[in-house]
Image 1 (cartoon, rainbow, N blue to C red):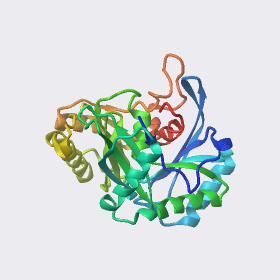
Image 2: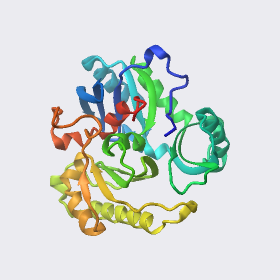
Image 3: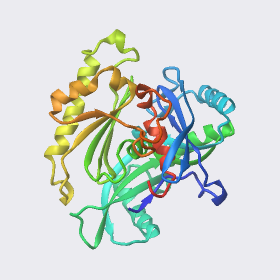
Length: 334
């Protein structure tokens, strides 16, 4: 599978291609994870989180640069952070699927996709940075490649990069959060179609991964509350969330011939985020979707529990899916 990940403004120098910390900045908190690789397995290094005041980051937009800078500086000094692989918010991303002439040259793929940006993304190509994955579909034409593309405005990346650099953190790469989460919760080599639902208190990110590639993504701005014990498990927010997830699930499964390609129906639904666990969202969705629903094993591509068990409670591990995926993304075999 060919792929191109979003980099900072310049290619990463060879001497900087080293293990870095995955840093996930959400509307609610910052999560970071360091992994140490030993051949085909990983162990957990430094990790942690820091809650963010409401409104500091909203819809992926940094509203309080000074406040976020202060928190990042504290994390850097406390944990000795230096090199970072950071997430980008799904809300700021344009995802589309397209066909280009067949080639095995990644540079030619990128060049062909640059011509596709103008017709698929409502911002000038010169102001856009994108990443892509080739979909190895049995239904694709032999003279073409079917490609999934995520494009992000350069100014969004620049703002995040400038904040990180201002506190002495070096961003080596950026990756859209949906692509990163797929790296951690979809077992390597799984070619099935999986809906991933990452639930937070104020928003939920959904993506559908098929044949190892993110094919659909969306953010639901539905607030279910920061304290589940106060809102109960039958709140208006929860009911709205379940309804929207059901709608997306049904739409995907009933539109199997879109784009001259047969979409595989969703095999199962994977949940991440501590909020999803607190809400017992698996029980709600199982009844509505009549399909397998399970909580994510965010370590499935990192290690075997027979050899190593990360020292993180299962409930908390569900918040680290994106950060783990960011680290895994630096390795060519992921």
